[in-house]
Amino acid sequence: MSIPVVDFGACSLREKDVSEEQMISLSKDLETAFTEVGFVFLKNTGITQEEVDRVMAISKTFFLQPDEEKQPFSRKSFAGSPNHGWVSFGIERLNPSRPGDLKEAFNITSLQPDIKWPSGAAKGFREIQTSFFQRCKELSLRVLKVMAFSLGLDPEVFLSAHRFIGEEGNCSTLRTLYYPPVKHEEVKEGQLRCGEHSDYGSITLLFKSSVGLQVRQRSGEFLCAPAVPGAVLVNIADLMQRWTGDHFVSVLHRVLLPPPGDLSTRQSLAFFVQPDDEALICCCDGSNKYPPVTGGGYIAERFKASYGQN
Image (cartoon, rainbow, N blue to C red; front, side, top):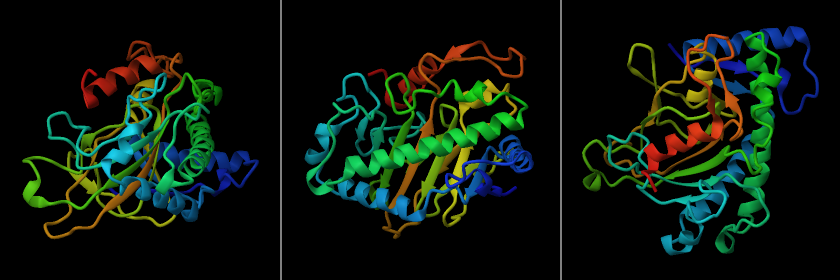
């Protein structure tokens, strides 16, 4: 089974209104994708390739600096926003049974004015990243609205739980990722660029520059996600599966090593949409299949598994 490609033009960021007929058609397509595969490519979202390229370019400028230049911006360095900042190479293990992932990242979680941002060689980093964060926020809310429609729910069921994206009380994150060249002679047994994992929150928007991502199918086999120019790859995350009583499915995915001798780098941008910290997530189908949980409480437990207790 392949990952569906759906035209999101009716709900594009360029559009103000969508007809009921268009919403019905689009919601059916998304429901099919999210119940059968857990992933979908959306084209014509209103976010341009030029926007994506600009974020990747300034991100690469930051990542190529010496570690001592990046260290002041390390994750856990920002009071009140513990997930914001630079994650150094090999620190994160998204599959805790494997060695550290062969990547580094910068998490943009807080848009508060008192947050310190990279400058110098990465001049413009703050403006470019925060602008793209807002674009992803707008798109994600439109996707959530279509998802609610597909379930016969009032859109506010989802939208009211995501009121504080980019503000205190919500840890939705724009994550820019850099995978440096792999020296196969230094790779530990079982080590990957990104270990098998499922995402934590509601949905994820992924913008990738190349192939390498694999998605697990119901059969247990992994499917290579193709490159679809200009499209956004959207997937269901664990809390949304729980929220919908397992109607929408969150599936494992990973990034493999390149073949020996391939010294290419890889970049991607992921916008992880999380419910507000105080939002109480209950099964929206009335099934009570899972006990209620707050958005903040759930994400805190998942971070412990990926980064350890500290």
